[in-house]
Length: 269
Ligand SMILES: O=P(O)(O)OC[C@H]1O[C@H](O[C@H]2O[C@H](CO)[C@@H](O)[C@H](O)[C@H]2O)[C@H](O)[C@@H](O)[C@@H]1O
Image 1 (cartoon, protein in one colour):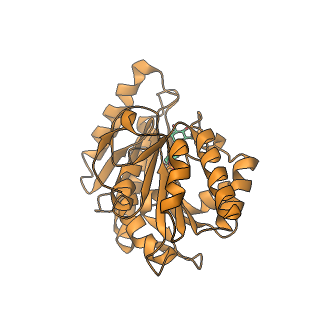
Image 2 (image 1 turned 60 degrees about the horizontal axis):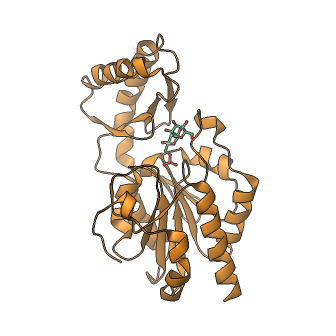
């Protein structure tokens, strides 16, 4: 596999390529899965993105044949409740919280120093966004998400302006953009990719397993850039943009099909 960026529209189907890929994946696999937009469809509010029982059953099967981690922007304790599959490893908060195989959460030590700034931004934005219908905050200890999916198109620029105003007073924080969400994080050089680099040897001490990463968001590109060196990146494709993923699946329904066919082949082998 290579790390050459491509346009998302050019990626071949991961489902169609699966039989051929299985022949090259001989030394065992390891699965890294994003949550929102990958295991569940994107919906109006975060609390409505519940995992379908069918998907949970697939994850239970999957973890019986390979190590599986969920790598998400959500908090680990929220992911544990939403996914609720024994044996999985969780990475949350875009990599700022990482679980090891023993289930112990390893938070980046440096994050502590950014919490007062995040608290201050949260308070200012609670006041500043109060008058904008549909805007709401999701505080995730090490980060703060400003959601605007439910904000009228004409008001979205107001949300962005308020966020910029408040953040201009806190240059130690950084911003990443997700799907109708602004994610405010400690300004550390850390992301899902760095977390995946940390996680891979935890899940596979031999370093021989082939990692597969499936994700839908811009933040997953950091993980694709790490996995592309020795594994396979699969984008859940919503729009066209440059990506380091190798294959595409069209939606969480195709992700389920891909995982089902993969499990079936591995169990039959
Ligand atoms: O890394 P992920 O697992 O993809 O998480 C990214 C963010 O997902 C959630 O927000 C997004 O999904 C919501 C539910 O479908 C949707 O309402 C929202 O508009 C999306 O931005 C989650 O709430 C965030 O905390 C995650 O960082």
